[in-house]
Figure (cartoon, one colour):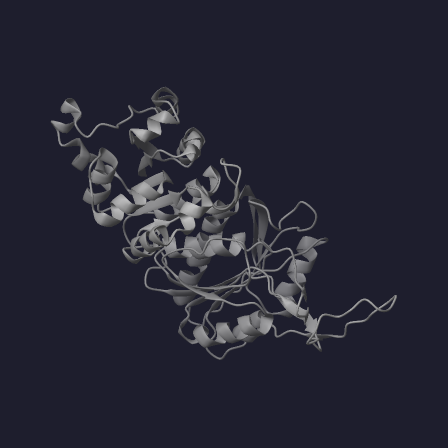
Amino acid sequence: MNIVLGITGGIAAYKAPDLVRRLRERGAEVQIVMTVSAEEFVTTTALQAVSGRPIRSNLWDKEAEAAMSHIELARWADIVLVAPATAEIMARIVSGAAPDLLTTICLATEAPIALAPAMNHVMWNNPATQANRELLEQRGIHILGPDTGSQACGETGAGRMLDPETIAATVCGLSVGKGKGALEGRTVIVTAGPTREAIDPVRYITNRSSGKMGYAMARAAAAQGANVVLISGPVNLPPPTGMHVVNVITAQEMFDATHEHVGNADIFVAAAAVADYRPTHVASQKIKKSKETSRIELVRCPDILTSVAALKRAPFTVGFAAETQNVEDYARLKLEDKKLDMVVANKVGDGVGFDRDENAVTVLWRNGRQEFPAAAKSDLARSVVDLIAQNFQAAQGADTEPRLTVLSNLD
C-alpha cells in the first residue's frame, strides 16, 4: 500500500521515524510530506533515511510542481495519514484551506484520510477543536485517538498522540484494498471490554479486560467492508470511527443491547469479558466497614453468547473466553459443551493477555488446529477476522444452516 504521511509542527513529531519504520514493516511505501513547522521538531535527514524516499515539503518546488506533483501524490496514496495532527491542521482541513503541500494533498485526494491528533489537553478539549473533530468525522475522516496521559508540557490529560504501533496497525487496517472487502455489506456486531456489576454506589465487580482486542476486531471488520455495531463496556479507549457505538456498563445492559441489534446481524463477535456473576442486592448507600468479615451473595449474569447461539436464526457467532491453565483442554470442552464450531484460545493472567498490546492464540475446530504467533492485537484481529470471513463465506455456501462460534480470550 502507498501511504502519504503528513507530519505537522507538534512535539509528537519526534515519534515520526518510529511510525515510518512500523508502517514499512507492514509492507507500506511511505512518502513523507512535512509542514514548515514540523521541520523544527524532526530532521529531514532522519526521515529520508527511514522512509527511503525524498521528503516533500514545498508546494512551490519548481521541479516537482512542474509535473503537478501534489496531484500525483494525491492519486498515488492509498491513504493519507497526518501524524501528529495539530489543532491548526485540523482547522485548515475543516475549512478547505490549502496554503501548503500537505493540505493541498488532503483537498485533492480521493483516498481515505486519517488524523492522529496531538496537542495540549486544554487545546484538545477546546470547543473549537471538538467542533472541528465532529465535522471531520461527519465527512468520513478517521480520527485516531488521542490518548490520555502525561504530556510534554508536564500536564496530564487527553491529547497525547497514539503510540506508533497502534497508529500503524490501524492505518494498515483502514487501507486494506480499495475494492470491496470480504465482509462488504454484512452487518457485524462486536461486544468489547469488561462489564461492571455494582455492589454499592462506589464499588463494583469487574475484570482486567481493556477492550483493546474487541475494538481491534471491530476496526478489522469495518476495514473488510462490514457495517459494524460496537457494543462496548466501560473502557479507556477512544471510540472507533465509521461504526455505530453503543456504550453499556452491566452484563444485563450488554445482553439487552445485543438482542436489540442482533436480529439484523450476519455475524456476532462476543469479544467482551462479561461478568459471570453479579450481587443479588445492590446497596443504596456505601457499605460501611463495621465487621471483621462480610459476605456478598452473587447470582448468575445472563449468558450472552449462549443466548445468541441458541436463536432460531442465529448469526454467525464468534465468542471470546479466557483461561489461566489447561488452555486447550478447557477450550475443547467448551467446543463440545456449547456445540461450537471454533475455539480461539490463549492463556491470560499476570502479564499475559489482558490489558496488553500483543497476544498469541491457538485456533481449534473440529477437524484442525492453527496457531497464531505473538503479534500486536490489531494485527491479530485482522488475521482472526480474515479467518472468520473465510468460514462465514464457506458456511453461506453450505447446504445446512450455518453457525460458527469462535471462543477466545484475546482481550
